[in-house]
Length: 184
Image (tube, rainbow, N blue to C red; front, top):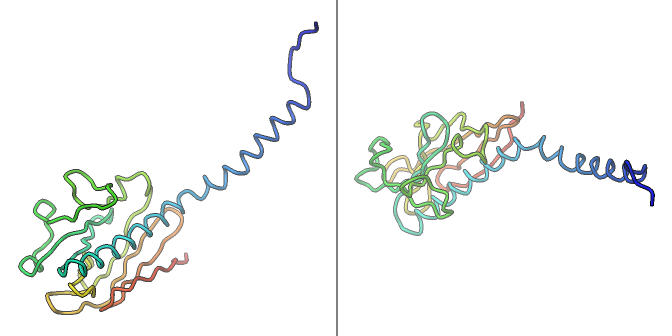
């Protein structure tokens, strides 16, 4: 019986073809990874804003999205008439529980893009929410409010990623959300 010292030409061609096919399928998904991370962050923000609005209506109370000072994320909070105007204090804030189970320590509903590898390179850019730039509050009827019983103006949050940016617009009164990709 004859001993083989190598691979035949057809075997090499098949292996090279399989490697080329794997590269064709894998490389585009790796190249667009930062875009997917940015889009995932936008979807998360939009769904959390919608959740805060729905929770405010369901419980007939106030819910707030508090944006963190350094642009790394936000928190979802319970507020009432007595604490409505109080400045944000991370230690004493009344955080909502995260229904998806991804909340940070102690059950706080905090979304921290910098600490979550799913959102690598994503951060919140320009935030303009009724002049404060730090929060959006929904009232018991689901509309945005700037103080107890006073409707808020429009809100604008920019989500910046490595390769692209998006603008999330919050309509005054209704809280309707619109997402736009920013050019440039």
